[in-house]
Amino acid sequence: MSAPDPEAGQDAELSFIEHLTELRNRLLRAVAAVLLVFVLLVPFARQIYAVLAQPLLGRLPEGSQLVAIEVAGPFLTPIKMAFFVALLATMPYILYQAWAFVAPALYRHEKRLAVPLLVSSTLLFYLGCAFAFFLVMPVVFTFIASMTPEGVAMMTDIGRYLDFVLMLFLAFGLSFEVPVATVIVVATGWMDVARLRSSRPYVIVGAFVIGAIVTPPDVLSQIMLAVPMWLLFELGLIAAARLVVRRGDAGG
Image 1 (spheres, rainbow, N blue to C red):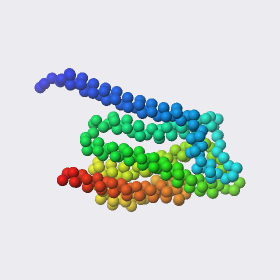
Image 2: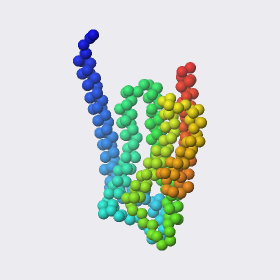
Image 3: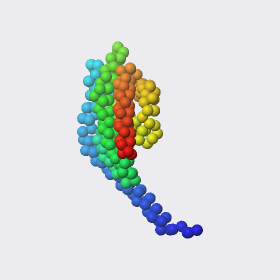
Image 4: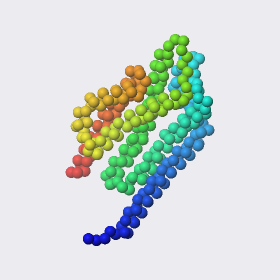
């Protein structure tokens, strides 16, 4: 029986330390990019908040306005919004750093699949946020304003409004990732396309349940989340089926 090779153990330890160093460097670059953009946006924090508050401000009843309940709210809330915008703006660079860290460990065919998935997931998340801002929020706030009882002044706290907007952005951004998730499920072999197609009724019901949970309690906004999720699931099925065909051609 041969004795353990101390040099092999040292090489493994060195490799682990190198991976940790590489991970640290990638994280530092990502954090530095977010902080740099955030610092550049801080002088425009009030203007950024004003733009993102417009869907509500434009639909408030006459005499109503946003208010700041907390003492530091007028200062902190626009700063938080600027940080969120900085995070969104640097998301492609953050994903690139994650990709650069894991890419050396991937096989060639995994890299060919991972790059389109990273790009499409980023674009779909931005598309979901844009859909929420330009279509959903105006509809939701119009409905809320129309349901305000007589004699009640609608004056929303700016901090609560920020939380509501971030929740909508996150909900719609993630829901627009359905095609990517569908392709990943098929690519990893967890489920095949035929089985996913047979689960379509459950997906539709699940989309409406998610819409009821994360959107305000009106049918229209629930539909505006559930229907795109269903259609994106169908788009994911088409993309997954094409992936299976390509694999078959490559294998043949």
